[in-house]
Image (tube, rainbow, N blue to C red):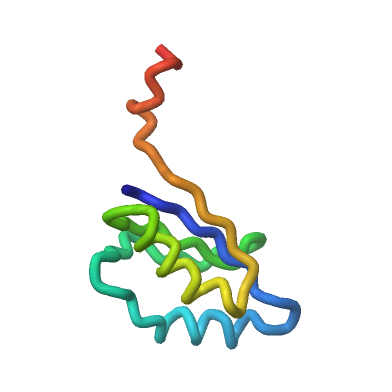
Length: 84
């Protein structure tokens, strides 16, 4: 399953947040496809694959302890069947 997590650093903690994310140990079963810093808000985005919701939550919890983040399931646009 493909997931997208947006990350917003706490006020005044941008550099610390990015350093911590660079050192983040990715758990077995998680494949990070993209880790991108953004100009503007949010500060960063991680696109990753997880075998199931449980593993995705475990990974996001490693990140969420020090930042504000939002995670969504991502689908290829062709899988939106109701929009022919």
